[in-house]
Image (tube, rainbow, N blue to C red):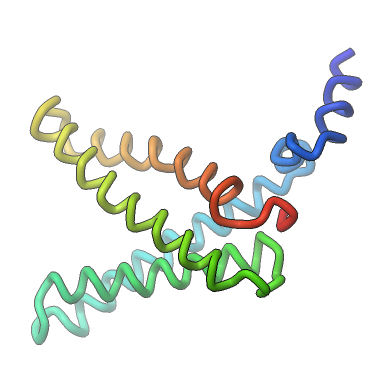
Length: 150
């Protein structure tokens, strides 16, 4: 009965996201996410080291965010989602908009966790990352990239 239910769900187009879990592709998605996190950290540190003394923290933050988001988009587009570049401008705009929303959402969450709930920074940051992972996961699959891409 369970096998039949799985087969039924896998054959439906609207449940295509379940294929990720059953086929093992979720590991590839997680790998790209970890790669993006590491590269984003390196970009943040390098831009700080190169530009902080000359331009200040706001410039460093803006440049590192732009570069990190661009690199993240390229990695997801090439290594996970369809390599078709027909809708690249539209997808990039949605990707960048989603990540910009995430920046403001994270700032709001940090304020709530630290200033209102008095949660320490380590627990607060872990909770923010965990909560935002769900938002990003669903935005990648349902808002940004074409459903025929994965």
